[in-house]
Length: 205
Image (cartoon, rainbow, N blue to C red; front, top):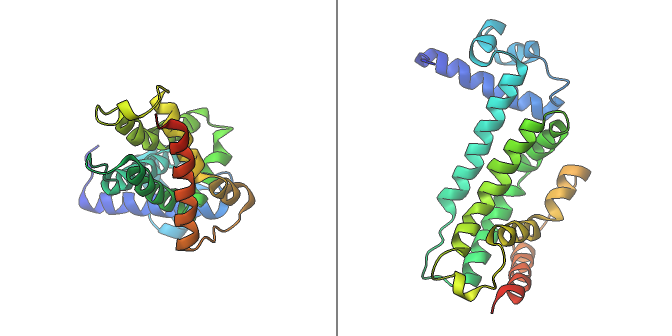
């Protein structure tokens, strides 16, 4: 779809306003009229760009999936010269910071609440967030200079388990219970180092 500069600005405003209201009120309790009332414009613009509320929600989620993975891809640096322990530690710090920040918690809560009614959304979340982020580690474990030092487990399974150990119980407590994640930098670093130590103890030959 070819969109003018003015149209692009309107598109972005609709996306941002929709996200804010979906996070604030939930998907079910947010109407397109609410979005237009807050962000301006017209319902015709929403229908033109997104067809309906489901289309708008899907576009918002897709953008956030892409933004999340882009941030992780840009910041993760898995240099061959670094030890496996250092790689896991640095990845763990970054993964925790991105996945457990308040915005990510709120977005995850919104997605999970809708996954039961929208299996396609749940599948996109699993593929684009869970598997794609863990895929960075999967590729690292598969490298010729790394694989010989690891027991012959499924690399994707190893990556998924490591990410889960880093993420939980903090992410789940935030999503389900609404608890704030109040770890100091020292506590966070100690937690991640303990996960790395435990993980390596099980996979080093």
